[in-house]
Length: 275
Image (cartoon, rainbow, N blue to C red; front, side, top):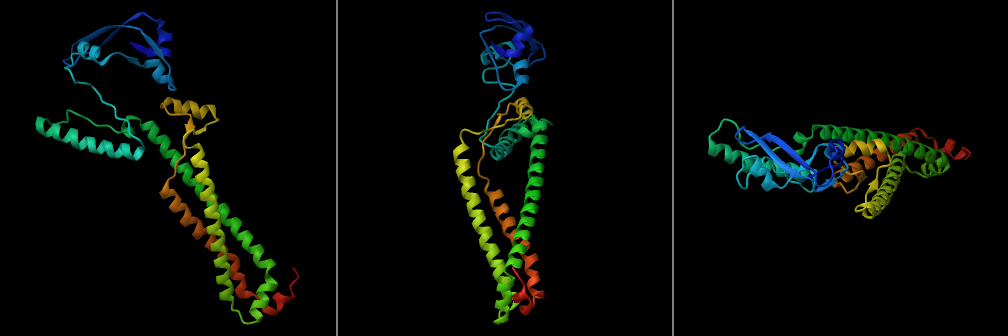
């Protein structure tokens, strides 16, 4: 057998020691197995280090009265959360449904659990992360909106003589308003292209190595769920599309506020104003 490092320390086990494992067999009787310690492992999860014991599956089946090929649980590891959800649904349709129909039992003899049901704490932590990200994104959008309003307000004041001259030669306020909105569109598109380009380079550089989490408490919390203490960024095209649309609309609305001053501007007063 191999055991976790904390379990070996708590039980005072050393290499070559024998440990008696007790449990309940498949028929309800007592199962017992004597195993010899041949290895000690350590993971990022203190819970696993404190409680996990591994023995060959053939020895387990013999001691717990399981037939060859039988097992209490099978664990499937998917490439991502979305893939895991879809795989759990497919397995439930393939295993639980046909088995229950063939046995005629009132309850399913097989049960398929996804990661949300196995680790509800991880689901809660993920929900908190999603809410925190949404709040941060909203705050960031508001800050950018105020920055754009301030920038275009200063632009309107600094170009007052220019706008007054254009209005004096026959340009209407709505045309000047359209010009500012087009300038805002160009600036937002340029900013989005630069931002996406920089983000692409950063993600490409750290995609494989990951970004270490400097906070010890956060790393310890992640270790309880056997998660890595590094963040491996990847592109989320849905988030890119949503953020792009929000930024384009936000900049246009922010540029709309100072542009309204053009409708109250008098060409003579505008050309006389000092810069």
